[in-house]
Length: 89
Image (tube, rainbow, N blue to C red; front, side):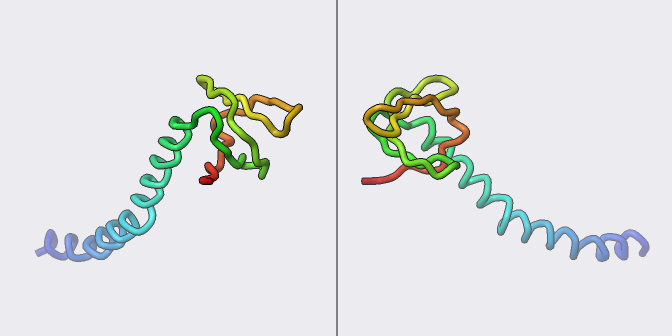
């Protein structure tokens, strides 16, 4: 009888964890996967927004960095980790 009582007391925790997993963890993992795919698919000419709020144009995607153009004169390299989103034209 003790085993059944122990299992019955654990059941609410298991249900709570399952709800937490499907409402929080799984959507966050899916969003992170989509963001990584977007960063890997960046090409020359794409417009992006950095996590610092700068809007720039991709000049050359490299392994760990991306060469971007801020305006006609300024070209800088930023880490791929700092790309917040891609602007769809």
